[in-house]
Structures are given as structure tokens and as C-alpha cells.
Amino acid sequence: MSSDFKHVYDSLRAEQTELSEKMKAAREDAIKFVQEVINDFGIHSYELQFQPEDTKRVLRPRGPAAVKYRTPTGIEWSGKGNMKKAFRDYLYSQGLTEADKDQFLTPEFRNR
Image (cartoon, rainbow, N blue to C red; front, side, top):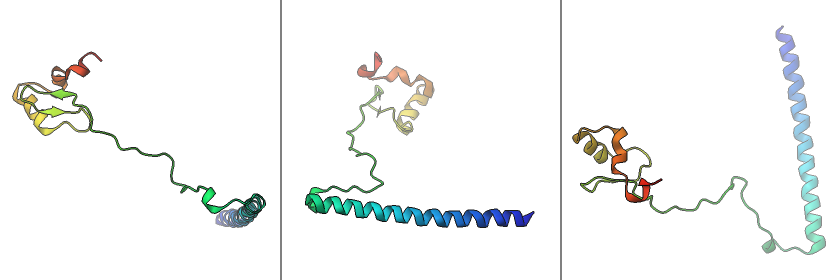
């Protein structure tokens, strides 16, 4: 039974090697073709743009998040990420739970 696995493994290894060689040859052909186009049209390197393969999208920095919750004592929290400790402590000191946080929504978030 183990000889069957070895045979399959060896077969797959040979197939993988063959495919790798075909991919390398196809890549070389593609490079030759592109080089011919560049030469035929007189394209200069400064006219081309190359981006790294891992660049998928441009990340733009965001501004600060709007304040979503504000207590009467002035403790503010955007509602993003973990609840601020001071905000949570205020809720607990008032006998409230985290589920009661909507009482402290700022005006711009109340009607949403």
C-alpha cells in the first residue's frame, strides 16, 4: 500500500517539475514579446509604470472618528473599538449597564 503512495507522490513530483518548466518558458516568451513591443514602438522606461504585486488598493488615512457617546461629565467615546474604561466606569457608577449606552448618544447620532 505504501508503494502506491510513493508512486503517486513521484508522479505528482514529476508533473510539478514539468509544469514549473512550462511556466518558466511561458514567462520567458512573454518577456521577449513585451521587449519586442517596447523596441518596435520606442517606449522609454519613464513612460511605463510598474506597481508591486502586493499593492491592491491605496489606503488613505482617515480623520478622527466622530464622537458618538458623551456623558454629562464630558467623557467621550466614538463607539469604535473597545469601550473606554472611563465611559464604562461612568455607566457602572450610575447603576447602568453597557446596554444603556444609547442614553448618551450625541445629537448627530440620535436620529439614525
